[in-house]
Amino acid sequence: MALWLFSLPLFASNQPVQTAALFGYQQLARDNLAIFPQWLSVLERHLKELAPAGDCRETRFNQCYLKHWLAFLEAIQPLDEAEQVRRVNQYANEKPYVLDIENYGIEDYWATPQEFLNNSGDCEDYAIIKMLSLKKLGIRASRMRVVVVQDTNLRVAHAVLSLNVNRDIMILDNQIKEVISHKNIFHYVPVYSVGESQWWMHLPN
Image (cartoon, rainbow, N blue to C red; front, top):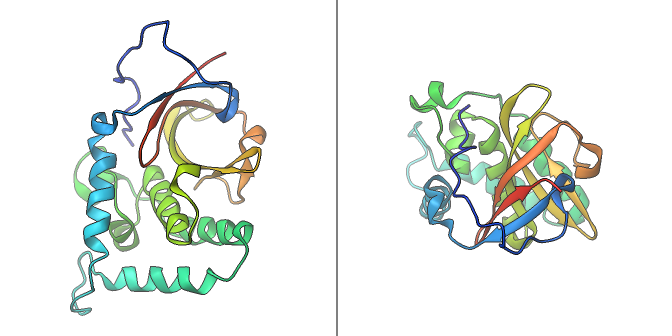
């Protein structure tokens, strides 16, 4: 995995910083999502993939995978939010972990749900399908972010989905079976996070 960690723009020290939040780090909100072309590409391609499905006999990036995914989401729609979140996390985590270099021949590729369901994927791909699943179930996108962190145990970059729930932030992680509070995770250092309309730089206190 080669997540983009260290080439973010620098900010002047007089930039306003929000109160401590995710993993206990301060956060600086920004609006310019254009510096995340992979993220914008995923959202755009996903909308195109939601067009009516064609011939289900095709095997490559088959839209019938989306039919199965949408059927799963429809089946859990009547459940309460906490159970929906648990089921979505479990559903995505059942897919095997596959590096981008094996799937696409490049170090870092952010996959749409259809691509992930067809090929499996790596950490940010799990986070993306979880986010778009929960959005499809009616959870506001403004409550969710794909968060790129440094895993201090494994000393590698990683990505998870965060979800604001009341006064807590829940983490959906392909490396952790259960959905748990960010307060109970001590080995992740957040670097940046992206949502549909904003992104955030995370700064130590």
